[in-house]
Structure formats: structure tokens, C-alpha cells
Amino acid sequence: MMNQQSIPEAFSRAAAKYDAFANDHPHLTRMRHKVYDHLSRHVPPGARILELNAGSGTDAVALAQRGYFVHATDIAPGMLDRLRDKVKDLRLEDRVTVEERSFLAVADVAGAPFDSVFSDLGGLNCVPDLSPIIRQLPNVLRAGGVVTWVLMPHLCLWEMVEALRGNFHVAFRRLSKNGVRSHLEGFNFDVYYFSPQQVMNWFGDDFELLSLEGLSVITPTAESKNFAKMFPRVYRALSWLDDHLSPHSPWNGWGDFFILSLRYAPK
Image (tube, rainbow, N blue to C red; front, side, top):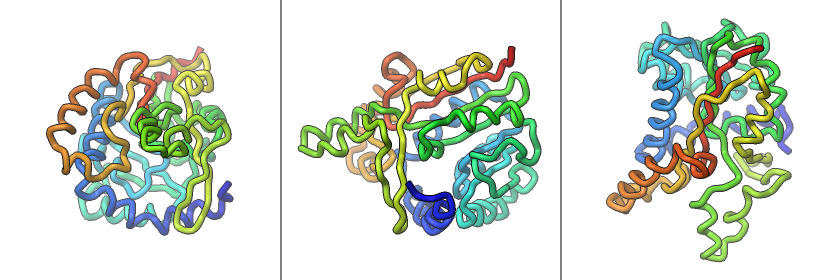
């Protein structure tokens, strides 16, 4: 696994590439909007959100523009530099604050308690066990507050279709119990996949499920930048089907990601 000192360097080096990849990416934009719509059903505008793994700030500024106050945290200085630039350029200093901090050490984060703790697009999938983070949530989340995390599950239909092309490594890599080795800017690290039930078990009795939905169940993965532009009619049809299936079992636990929201209701 990538050591903790290497993680900030790797993601800092990749910051500009992350933003460039997200530019002119209609499918990724659709995915993000689905996440924001999900969040807004449980967390009203005006709420204070603690964001974990904020990266270069795409979500932080989008949520601020939707009326939220966001305290954005990340461990990579290069990512945070781009985040601060976006906040300044969009004049969102009164709505977005920034702190360099690992999600593994949030218990004493500035500004607690918050109304919501949010993490998007698999930022938490780089650890094998989410319980060390969950144990810290009572220190940073008010009673009645909401956790909304977007995580990568074991079952991704779009990837499993790769088996038809003989690409078995991609098709079944998420089924590995020991994580999957990934590479970023010359560094190696492991990615882990979770089932919704596994995550809910980690949360325990003090958190009650509000909503679970799959994200990009039928549509391509976030890595597919050009499919929506090359095949717009097919993409629209897949998106319609995706919207109708993703809130329902078993589809709500499948996909490129799933969106899980729970309310903190300590006994």
C-alpha cells in the first residue's frame, strides 16, 4: 500500500489532471448532479457541511453555489491550492473554508459540529475499513445530522461486461477481498470495495438509513469521458433506465458507485 507520506504527493501531482479530465465530461457532470440532488433531499440549503477528500474543490464550490456552507478538507496540498483558487475566483470565501486534514483524523476538525459529513466519488475507498472514520463522527456531527458518502461497490455491471471481451481482470477486480492495486503519478496504492450492508454494519445502531441509490448502474463508469458525446441517443436511453432502476433493490447497491445517506440518531 502507498504509505501515508506518499499519498499527498501523488494526489498533489495529479491535481491539474483531475480538473482537466472533468472538463467537458457530460457523464461525470450528470453523476455529480445526481449526488447533489440526493444530498439536497436530506440536507437543506444553508446547512454546514464537512467535506472529506474534497480534492480540487469541484463539489465544494458546486454545493456552495447551491446555498450550503462547506468546510472542505483534504490531505493533498496541491489539490487544496486548486480548491482555494476556485473559491477565490468564484468569490465564495464566505461559503467555503479549507483545511489540510486527513479523513482519518477528523475528530478535532475546525468548526464542528456540522449538519452533514459528505464525501464524493470514492474518496474513502482507499482504506479497507471505514470504522475508524465512523468512530470519530460523533465529535464532528450534530445529533440529527446526516452522513452522505459516495462509495464504490463490489458489483459494477459496466465493468463486468468486459468479460465478454476477455478482459477478466477489469470485469471481476472489484470482487477481490484484499483490495486492488492502482497507480497514480508513479506511486502504487490499494483501492477497496464495499457493499452497502458492510458499510451500514460499520455505522451501527446510532445511525439510521435514510436513502440508498446506485450511481451509474446502467450508464458507463466515470472513467468513460466520450461515450455520452459519441453515442448521445444510446446514452440518453441508458440514463433514463438508470434513473428508474437506481433507487430500487438490488440496483441501489450496484453501479460505479452507490450513494448512502444516514442520520445520526444516538441512543
